[in-house]
Image (tube, rainbow, N blue to C red; front, side, top):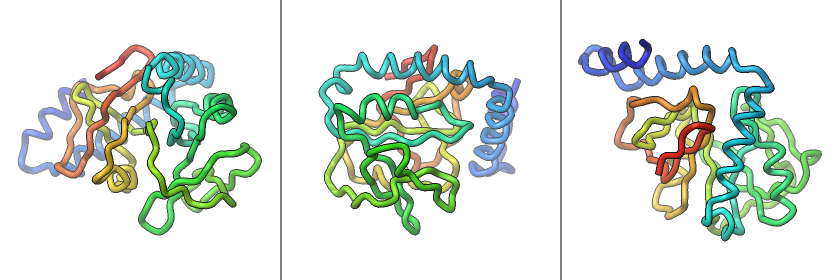
Length: 197
């Protein structure tokens, strides 16, 4: 029902892409609120089992992840597990840009003004990473990503050749979402029931 409504809206000149994106964000937020902690953990386990099987992941040494918020696919256990054998980086927002800092332990993370947990004392990492595991509000079958609207990841990806893997709950995978020319597609999108390549 929601996707039919969205497709009707986006065909009309009266609605802007930004309004259509807001509609998607609102709808996904409502659906996420219905997920239990057990369901979140089950979907997270399934997603990261798929990622661990990827040849690109097995070869990767430097990986950019995100320390999940309560409404995102949980990443904490996965980060702590793999930080023992790979270099895991987390995004840190400085002014309007996203920079990378090493993850060492959960205890050294500090909550930012945006409510995101970030490495506090690590130096910025300026070299390239092999894989970016990307959160999103929604993804579609064409691997288009809808973020929270700040554009930090889109700016970070400009002029970089990095494997981009979008991850989320099954409810975040839609048939089609509105996008602009500046929205950068993912190389893969993975949820519990979907693997889009």
